[in-house]
Image (cartoon, rainbow, N blue to C red; front, side):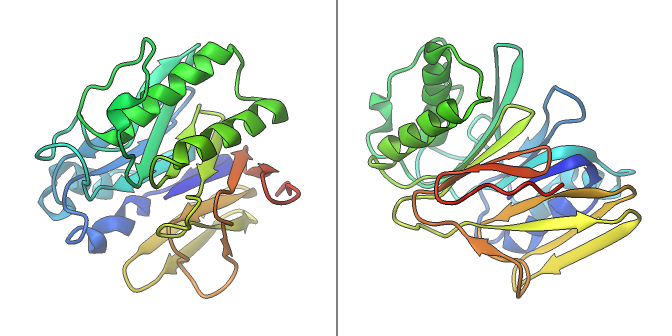
Length: 260
């Protein structure tokens, strides 16, 4: 799951969305957000219900960020669950703090070449992240133009030939969301607008989400499956969208729309 908004938005309960899914994704959970240009990260390699950090986050005065990344892990590679193997992952590149989360499995992932970025754990996901950062660094360009976004999309599609990829990547300003070529597990998004002082709640059989904003705000929520009956759009297999300051500024499949 991910959020991208024009202004920082309260997510006091956003992390609760995975509480009911922990039994089927019992190998770890994590939440990343940007209180400023740096990334804050809380994650644990265990079931949500046994977590002390989750209790702290639920009782905190409230997190505020324009971008959130959240993930619950059901491991398909690597050994016993560890902190190093738990999503989201983070690295610094060119003064930007990158966050990354992945659902899927990469075959022969040990063959992915690495630059100066090295995995701390043993997962295919972290190796994929380090490989992507090496490619971004080698290109020598910031992720801020349509040409670079098109290159990123083509790169992810090539990597997708190695397995299944649903992934979220952020540089602290933009949120890149990519859906697997085979439509593995699905990926959806919905636009939200707040007039100020509003609260929105969503839920389905396994997920609950509450967000609120005390100012006029607009943005998007991205989730594996819809959290309500209407307003959600399914990604086309192989599609990538780019969200920036609460606007859908680029899509590989359709004309981008700005929420403001």
